Length: 241
Image (cartoon, rainbow, N blue to C red; front, top):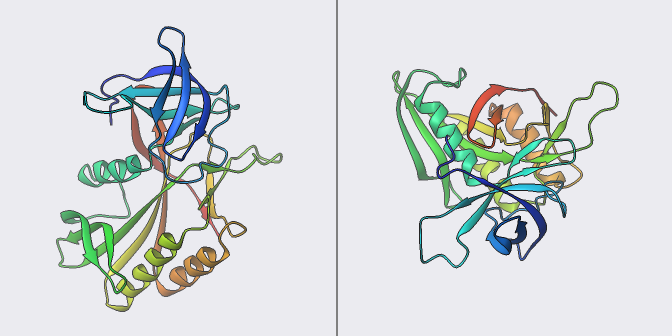
């Protein structure tokens, strides 16, 4: 997924009110940008970090620029737009880049399903008539790197997520009905090498994921390749309970 128009580099001053951030640019000065992430963004920003912005072609927008990438103290790039995770997975499904999901006949986004008034991110119908329900989650929270192996530990969620809990319950219902179900963690952080559930942050979510795996819900974790010019799904990385 090419960043078009191209991103511009700025320095972060602060993030606030969830959807706003102030930045400073050597030529444009200080200004406010839109932050497309409703989460806590834990460990994803600090004052004076480098950020990359994209200007919208919508002249009616109050804040023309959107915050797209962050660079942390390790030099890792972080994609902070949660919606990009779904776009990356869709692009990869269309190009048959996810080896665990094959024989694809159709891909339908945002399909209503389940007992709790939910929408699945993607419903894939296969050539053999079976169905796979895919729920995508964006992973950007990295714990400190292990001193033993230098691997970056990614965690999800970064805050208690009642919505995420509901989605896991719905995936288990899909299994009960005889369909396939996948919880797909899309890692938008170049420093993350392995992913686990953040049990200390949301123990209920951790418990539900463990139940879901035992029931037959598959967990896939793929890492994005990120640069300041483009972002794309790259390769799978380990998941650990």
